[in-house]
Image (cartoon, rainbow, N blue to C red; front, side):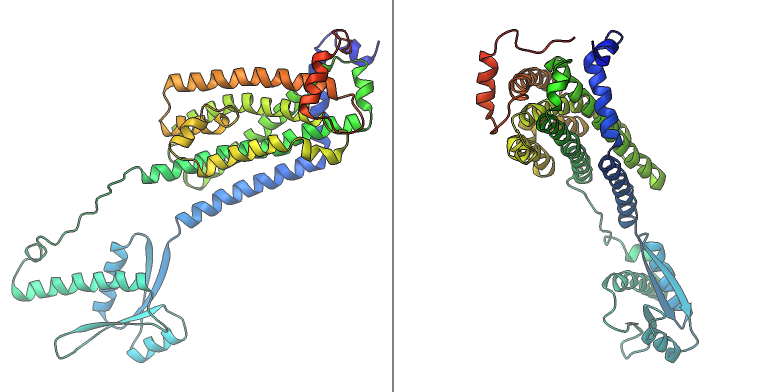
Length: 408
């Protein structure tokens, strides 16, 4: 009796296989390097997005009179997205020299003209359009105030009927942009997990098959236990990594300034975890079954190509999918891993739709696990040319009932 069989008296064999898979994968440098790199990218991306979205433009304006300084101050009060700094200089020559030396962004000055006072905004090149707009509004308001007082008319009477009220016809546009970001994040997490751990599952199967280690393992472990252990180990690692990525992003966002719609994100993330476990477990089983079709590491890519296309399509759906496409995809197994939680976040999924999508995903998972197990069982000991999936399933169908290794 082998040591693995002896230990199986206290724990299931598949659990021992899963623990071994976790230990082996955790010791690999590639896993740690990719994990640290992704955490750095996520944290850096959240910080960069925060500062870019909340960035304010600053202007330094030279003035030579109290009226100009008052106009700059009024512009600063009317422009919350911009910062203004006033530099008072003794005369026009000093102000223009400061502009030429790029010590200030512009010089605001009021001059007397035949038709009355006029304002000039001088810059080294063409004055900044936003700066010109802010100051133009400020000097116009200042001029109206002065003219109203000169005419003995109250300023509110002068401004009557001039108010322009902004109206947002599509109040959900900002919400839609945020929904897109959440859906993209779900899709990216699922895509990365499949690429890192799904392909690792297939690669592990091929390596054990190519080195004939699998023959030793199957002498002591039932085929199903070996397959289940591999899948469970990689799903556990995938969930742990996904949780780390999600926690890194959420914590960074909270530290740099809070997260809008946090409650909705948490609720939809819970559903994403449920669909993720089902979808990712299905994908790992398929990777193991398709990986067993290859006899060499070089054949693994072609053997798993159909599954890679499906994963890529799911990721693309999270980027470009809209409307009816997303609704339909939310009921398609594997694709629903991303699209149904996204609909939950958007508030467009009824409870029965969530239940139906979950039931379809579970039924598909049971079917694909059965197919993957048959393909794995009939192909894992096959050597020579790469088997096709149909040939593998035919071989499994004609396999004698007692052909599976025992040892549980």
